[in-house]
Image (cartoon, rainbow, N blue to C red; front, top):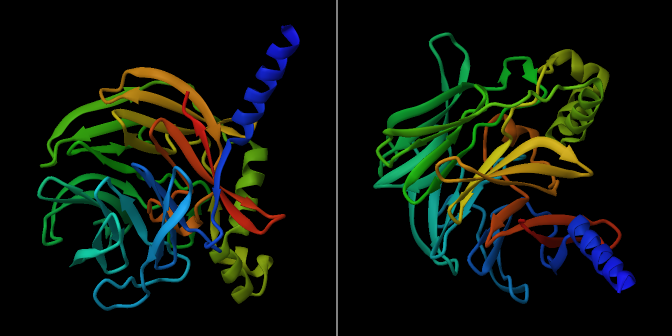
Length: 350
């Protein structure tokens, strides 16, 4: 009996370390984003979106075309377009417009952007978005701003310094994250601490979730890892080549490391819960605080560390994820280098 129990426990341990392989993305060469909604998985690769059924991981459709015409998606090198999926529609956040498709990939409408908007999410009669703007101090800022149905900015909810100011670059970009759930807006303000501010669809502040904790110090080893991640970034590698190598490239920038990691790395609000991703790691997994919608602690879990989004997306606070949480499950992409294939894995969130 004891031997059987040990075998079962060992199997559970292996499962939680690697996660269940749900399927192989045989049609995808370079996935740029993962979203799960309902019974479907959406993968973005350039202007193309692949739709898979989760139950048997069968490709049911791929759509999307590069271009500037109706329903077409423009591309900027090294910058991924946004993708948000709901139970009944898909929103593609392109460079110069947003496009709303049915859940099966049929275009319903598109709206031209005004200004430098990203992370556009529907709320109320309009949208909320991340914007870039110059301050009176001549510094660059990232803001969370309400946008009306015609894409005009109506109300600023939060503002934070852009992690790169001229040649000064912060080696640990503190990305601003925003989520919409049940017509409420959740803005994480980790530059000020463990803070999530909640607004209604009109931008009126409802309440603030705030917690205390022990700061996580950035060690010398952490700095080495951050520097290597920086060097491995595709855009940085391209710029290094243009500059004539690392020694020449590093003269162009001033690198700055913070004393502490931000208390919040990312937030997802889904299924009546707030999932707060942190920089705390343990055996290759990242710590998540799971809260109810008012901020009450429900539990903490450690989930597999996902692929890192590109540096430019993090500097610009663009939401690009290689993981998603839905249906009480954590989904994430894994590159099988031996088979030269990408796989979708999943693990229960408990």
